[in-house]
Image 1 (spheres, rainbow, N blue to C red):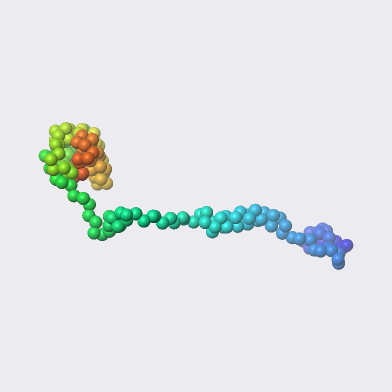
Image 2 (tube, rainbow, N blue to C red):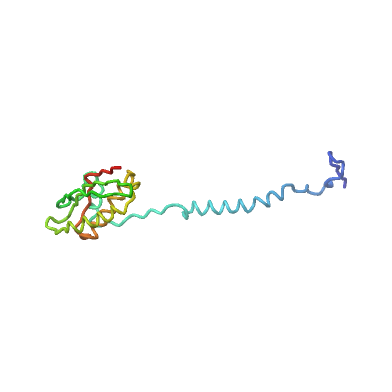
Length: 176
């Protein structure tokens, strides 16, 4: 068995294989490091393509009202109209400590034409809420949707959940 010398250092390196001996394997450490990664990725791919990660599509059973459901989402569908709209007198409220004034016109849509609406109690609920708001909120255009939702909630609390369809803001003026 002859020893080979390293060309750079001149020191003996690995022994040369004899004529009948197999050559030593190189890269064994790299394969040892990559083997777990390859096994994990193969297991992940197999589970993904086997259906564990794919969405499941379930067909809905046929119901007797299926054509009504489809009609509700068609272009011909329109929302149910409220029975009547009651316009309130405009509310004038001081907003903040700087003397800003909010003048807001509101209308209430109700489901029943003959519903008894307690207008003073409704105006009290609206005024109490609007006085608590910051003028910076009122001047923000994106706050308009939240304002409508909050007024609708208060109207339904005061008048009744089944009577109030919507609250409409007809006028909005904030002075400084």
